[in-house]
Image (cartoon, rainbow, N blue to C red; front, side):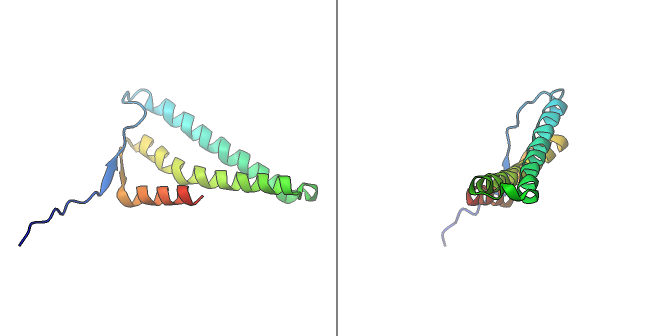
Length: 107
């Protein structure tokens, strides 16, 4: 009977942006503000397109679709990164990584 290698990857270790603990709150605040600005700006573009009937032209339709895709991209990656920065966790599960990659490639 042959021996088989049964090792499996269960999680990935993330390198992070800085190992200095004093910079972690600054990095967290920077990425949180970028996340909130991106979400708010894209939502405002979509709401402007929906609320004003004069903006129902192909250019604004594609602009609102681009805003929706940007919201999806931002929502796919940023929350996990913010949680990892806040909790000082440097791991992501294999399933979580594959899910993020699948959604990112799908979009």
